[in-house]
Image (tube, rainbow, N blue to C red):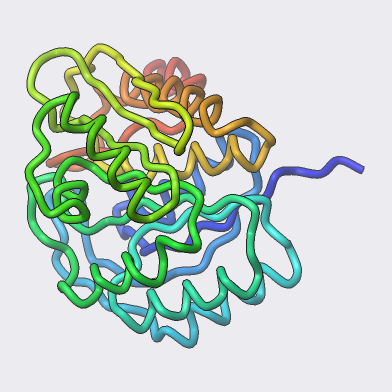
Length: 272
């Protein structure tokens, strides 16, 4: 029997196709997994920004998850946009009920530009209800500051934050350093045993829409395929670098365009 690793993405829908559920499906498929979905919100957006967000009723989010969990039995779950307290509570309830082996949470609390994307009550619900049920959290620096309640600006502060957040919430943290200044980029992973730093050169690109979604769903896919946490993060970092490099010269939309999730196909795109 040829069994594919199954990854359930619980996230919002991006009408422009660059982030959210759409980015997750592309990423999981590009990496050889099978993508299932539970949509938490319908967003009206394009490369220029988000115009509207309509949350899906929490009960319907739960029923989508339950349908997938009972039949497909995913090997990993990736959680992105959760939205409100009711949806967060329902997701947490089902995670506790089904106890999936691997759960990767991209908290989607603060935008790349630093704008809050959820209420204080929703943030509290993530901390108290959702974090106890997940394996790995992948906050950017802004989200790390929200979770830690203090500024984080340097690699040393990222290392300290990863360790302190693990001690507080008892799950692994990958602190993403995309907002660090300079040409060197750095992400910090702490799983309770070892602190790992993943460094890379910054790729100059105006097409970075969906990087957080792509990274977290890539990690979830590699975990579903049996990789260790370190291996999953390392391989996901390699993949996203290729996707950014492949997409940096593409012209999709008039603003912050998407990555190219199928790097091996970029030559055929350029030849058209």
